[in-house]
Length: 220
Length: 268
Image 1: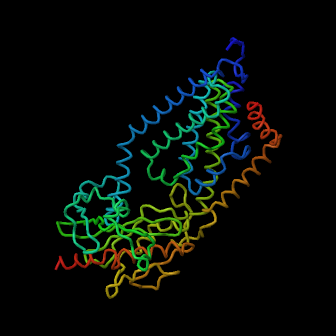
Image 2 (image 1 turned 135 degrees about the vertical axis):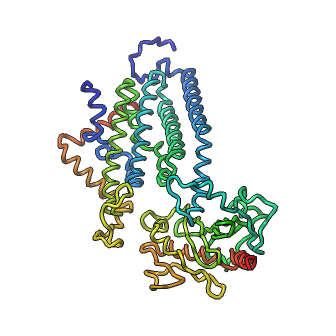
Image 3 (image 1 turned 180 degrees about the horizontal axis):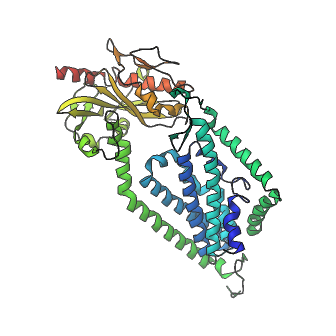
């Protein structure tokens, strides 16, 4: 793996994480993280859409006319989302019902469009594949961390398996109802953003500007 | 078009061939075509699976699970053969013989001017507005004797309409199970109506006192040994109230009460 490829794949996992550094995709990150199973499924759904979206856009990037490029990307992304949603409904019915509208809303998830527009339009298929995969996994990573914390403290379980014995079942653990509501998602993601940004000191702000730069320069 | 192909890769110049009207239209058409073929293929290929899921999870399996334990490997089909699906006329309590119960959708029927009736406002505690004249009832048999009656119920919760089934013992009074298969209540609060521990409290409770449904969700803990109350859900008072209302409506005089009375008489 050369440097460019490594950066495209590993960068978005931590150093340039789409959720904690670019602060994208927050809505679904709040909504589907009350427990781990839906968060994993949502991560998988977004990762496949981001990867396939990047690959398809990169494949036809020389033919996409500049003035309809966004709508072409959205068409591709929404088709992929519908396909993923249909597959989930067929093979993971129960969990897909918990995810309700949020799989469909991947269409409007900024991460996916930011990658197709910001990366796949200008890079080869291989690199775009790695970039989509990396960003999807970066998003999933945050989802899994947040969902683990929320499910463990909110319900005393992980993946539905009891970890902390509940008071209602003669244990010692009081569940924290706040963890199951949206505000706790804000708190935890906020703390994660703080933690990751202070951990990778060198110019986190620069990274954010970088993304806007890409989008801006291409719009001109 | 006259610009020739002198543009470097990844340039966004507005004068390139790829920005010509012809190319714009062609690319737009091709992309839409490919995408729509992919989407419709997936939809067609997965359709049988979707239908199966809807029937299995939303339908009969849910109903049967109220009174039977279904595990991996349980012969659900055989159990379903033990279940009689009938249509009952709510006003008279008689069975409707000239319609196919398995094809009947009571929520569609409620909207139909001939098949639905408005619920009088003073009786509409479940806040449903209209209901169908007929509803499906499920009779679970054991050795050809009816063991359980399972009735569909629905009504307003806090945010959403709750759809569920209530199972009664053959005496038409004792609850054998309760389950909601569709609702949009707050996860962690109102959605606790899905909690198996809470739902299991309903089992064995009595519905009627002097012919009036008095079963209800208490505020806070139910008095110990209570025959007609189950514990309230903390943080979900309104959802609990909704559950009380919809059960009292559906088992009341405007709901299944006439049917249950007829059922009782038929057995004697």
